Length: 176
Image (cartoon, rainbow, N blue to C red):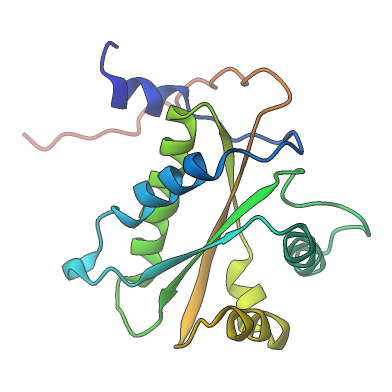
């Protein structure tokens, strides 16, 4: 295409096999910065990002997520990614789910542009609506009524980037 943004959009894929190697903090910060620059309804900027690089907490959240999804013991819903970026947004903002979704989308594109793999993982709502999740937030100093929007699992890809699947037809309609 020849346009860096459009090329990144076309090259981004969901990665399901990560190296345990931790990306440099500077790159993680750049990914997060792209997220907090996402558009938000009425400029409310209600989403927050929790950057989890500490292995114990990362594994605790992975276990919570696996229990919620009904996965077998030891299954890692984050595919081995060493970094989990949790996006939450204030429930009192009408557009909080959409705003948080844009944050995750921006972070996934930024990750790709920096040579990192990413994947969106659901079930953050259930995690952080639980007593265990609320305790985690309190321990991190997060105050307020936040809803978990999703996780951006982040790290280096182990396997080659998967090929794109063909786009389904009949998804664009013009009203001219």
